[in-house]
Length: 264
Length: 175
Image (tube, rainbow over all chains, first blue to last red; front, top):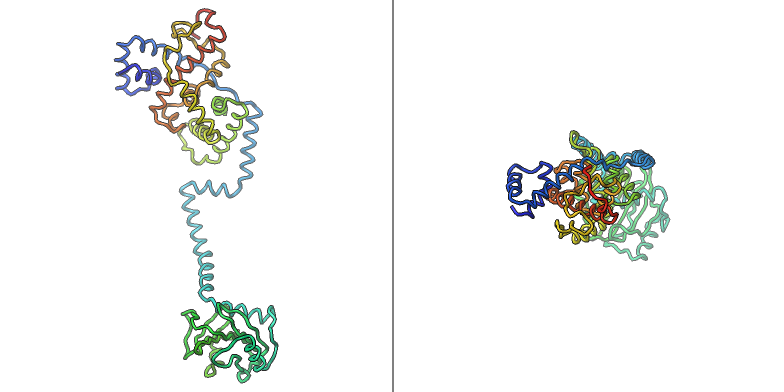
């Protein structure tokens, strides 16, 4: 062992904290090195004096009180979020919190997400639902108010809506009188929207060109018609070449099917 | 609390900063009390928090102290003690000759990396293992820093004695 190494180990040596092998090596070096012998003796005396000295300073009373007050303040201020973090750090509580979170996700968040997912999937049908409610509550004002299909047909033509067949359907034979209509956007298309009223409530009809319109695949197909339930509405969809017709009513799906059977 | 406050005083070398360090250390200890392993040394745990807080709070200064002062002390040898006016035999240096405040001043003059080890082991009486955990370094580093730190402290005290003329008073008595 060299003196340099001995000097590095001297503290642990005089503190008696060297491993047996290292202690033996230092001891062997010291027997042949008077310089390190003096060094160790000096270090031993100094370390003993240092340990015997009480160099701990008392904390000033006002500082002590301030620290305790700050802990109290933190305790009051941190509230539930910090307590939650604290609990999260404990494995047992973490498992319990994770379980509670899972229940929350499955019980609340998932249904909401599924509902939003369904709404997104329904796309155009949801717009029909919104328009139905808006028209029913007169939240939107019809651009043309007339009970005459031809008048509305002319208005739609002026607005550039041209379909392979007549745009405005006359439903008087089914007990529904035309109230009026508007040109509204529906999905990416421009739609002719018609509102009817009868003894069986309101009936809203959208007609538009949409060759590539994708309707939800979960509808009930009856002949050329497909029926959907959207919210509290029943919707009948059918294609007529490039034109699409969507008819929405608050009637049950069965009643709507009966109403429209053989008509559209 | 006194131990933490004292360690803060040495590390920051400033009373106001020591008080802030003490407060932050206790707030953190209280907040993370659940992480304390019961049955282990609570003082060592508090010292770990104190050192981490100190390093985070005064990171730049900590680096500066380590960098600059390590350069100054890199040639720590026995020859430095044989200055004019001091006892020619370094074994004669006795701690009892100095007031507590003088020892404290000498301690505060040490580079922080040596100072913190002396504070942890010689003043706070932590084991080498606890000190190593507190400042996140190997035990071997604790051993060598402690050896060198104690010699540096003696050198600082000798310098102090020289400036105050203690050397001319004659003999240093052991405690």
